[in-house]
Image (cartoon, rainbow over all chains, first blue to last red; front, side, top):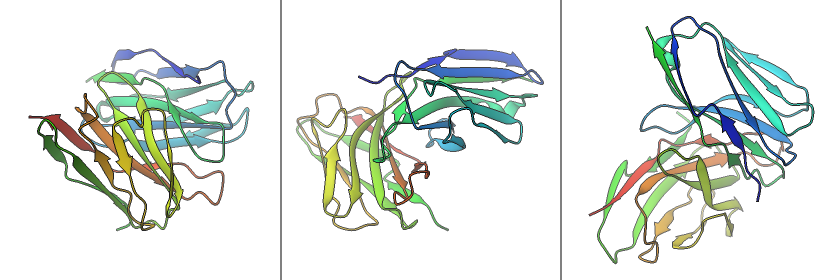
Amino acid sequence: GQQLNQSPQSMFIQEGEDVSMNCTSSSIFNTWLWYKQDPGEGPVLLIALYKAGELTSNGRLTAQFGITRKDSFLNISASIPSDVGIYFCAAASSNTGKLIFGQGTTLQVKP
Amino acid sequence: DGGITQSPKYLFRKEGQNVTLSCEQNLNHDAMYWYRQDPGQGLRLIYYSQIVNDFQKGDIAEGYSVSREKKESFPLTVTSAQKNPTAFYLCASRYSRRGDQPQHFGDGTRLSIL
């Protein structure tokens, strides 16, 4: 079945550092989404990507929809303590909106 | 405020018991989804519904049931047939009439076995 490989699994960085994480798959998708989840809460949408090659920013966050439609990356610049959480990539390939999720990247930021 | 409300926040199930998790949205979204999240794993789709009175199985539907009698509501029942129900359950919804609309999530229900 379809599967997303998200890496790294976890990151422990110093405040102010830049962060990069990515998702890859052997399948082609029409939509790539990036969510952040805080402990005990639901995921919150960060960035949505709908076109191959699309590069979108949201404040200090930048994400790209890979040109092959099989991958996406998320960059966080100048990390701050509130960036701590679990980041998930998700992808969809049909109009049902059914999403497949990566396993998540746990980010810890040392002040 | 518009949003997705899940209740209860915490739920405990006794052996052999069915329990129902509530999900209500006032966003006028057409499609609604239920996911299960286990520690260290991504979300897995249980059931989804594109319109009222219609729903489809996701990847892990066994031991679960749903109904969609109203646009705003999509309750999930965890039946006694689900032998490992302990997990964090997340409900999501989406405006599905446009393909470029993402899913938005509620704050989840944590289910544990007594």
